[in-house]
Image 1 (cartoon, rainbow, N blue to C red):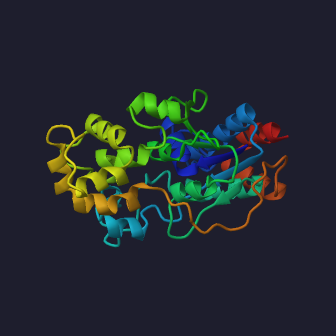
Image 2: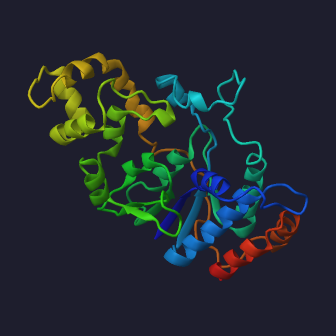
Image 3: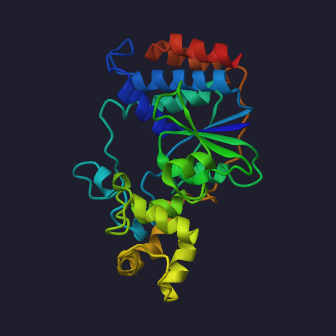
Length: 302
């Protein structure tokens, strides 16, 4: 089984869930580093994947998404940024990210990113048909669009914690949102997502979006009906709202849907049984006070 980590989602969760009083010997906060290491140890111990990949954001706000919808993640831009590329990240988290990357590399856990793409797109590419069973660990609902019972691809959702993961499959999506199990991206396009700066269709909330996707089966079929003059099957007032939002609906799928073709480097994806670079790991452990979590992880790998 292949396990893919939405690493930014996990280290943000660790950062906000563990006090900043957890510091290195020099006083630098390492709460996100320590928390992520312990998360990985727990996941490996409980699920024993054959392959483990930590995905990263090479570009948290890709140009192709901004070109389609300029508001995409605009509210997350760092204060004063005029380039549109600097993300607002807590000052005490920012220096921990390179440490996380160095730890992953020294342990030997495959770390993958792709220039011009988000971690979500790397995950989408790593879950393409033919990859076998995949578990995606994330706190991001956007990745519910990847669930597919036929392969199978599941999401292990961290909303209730890493030790109490919600297993998201097609039945979960249907039960929670009232839509076909593989229709989450179409549903999210209609509903919108303020956390990502996606407006959705004005006046179309979650219930109406679910009713539309359930009735027509997909966004493509819905738009074909709209453009073809079909009037049956639209909730009261919804047809006019969709028609008014036709320009948004034309470009939104390029933003909402994760890519499945991000260029990826060749890498050994196998779960390591021991550290790839023990000397580097000792240096990192001493520098940042990581003995306890690293020993837990290495014991679990062994």
